[in-house]
Image (cartoon, rainbow, N blue to C red; front, side, top):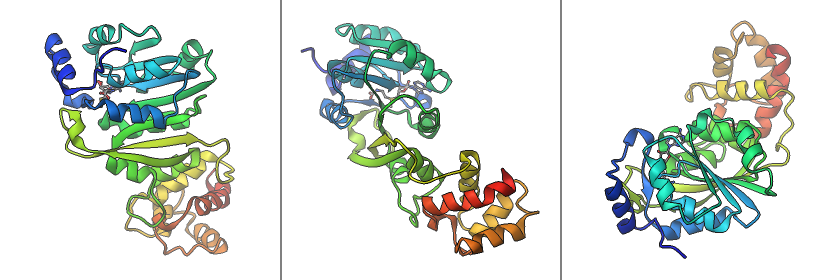
Length: 292
Ligand code: SAM
């Protein structure tokens, strides 16, 4: 077994050898605690049948832990300066493929079809760059990829939003999207001290396991997410005001919207954050004929 990359000493040594300087704008906070990385791999349930997909391998700290347990690892790194470093640090592993790419621009279906056709299980595992956490998660959720789910490290505050319950301050349109596609669970919180350099916030690891079927029946997903987004547009406003102000044609359909809410037994004066996903589903199904 080779030495772990994720120790303060080895990380410093690698960074010095290559004269690497961190780019804050790319969310570069590298993990320097191999035990935490092994726990992430455990929580993701990575086996010799798994194809792991990593976003932002950095200098390979998590990548090598994945390579030791998975059948294959495919990773996307945006920063070209890290490519020669990764070629060096990951040279002991022949089951890793690094792509120099922005994950937001990658055709993930095509890469999976090319690189991970021969695995029976696929999982995304990543210590995400914090400046783009939400767009990355939304891309992974909405593209309906052939994956089991994802285990990702992100800001604790965002993890709390993803797993929030109705009526709490963290509950919002991102919560509903995540709960529509997955079962979400915060599996550990991680102190800022295990990163180099240390970020300004604490982190958490969240596990999102894809649902076989959505938890609610939605007639039109486009309208469903439009209604959800409109309902949370201004958190201090009532549901009725948010829907009429933020749905296309909302102002002209004020009376109809009010009638729909009353018929569903949803008080128009409630705030969006008090509705659970089932209420959003029936609301969007009833509104779809007006706005679809
Ligand atoms: N996985 C490493 C670790 O745990 O130590 C590094 C994690 S660091 C938080 C995030 C990594 O994502 C950095 O290496 C950064 O260059 C890379 N990155 C940032 N934006 C990216 C993007 N849009 N696509 C792919 N990689 C990105």
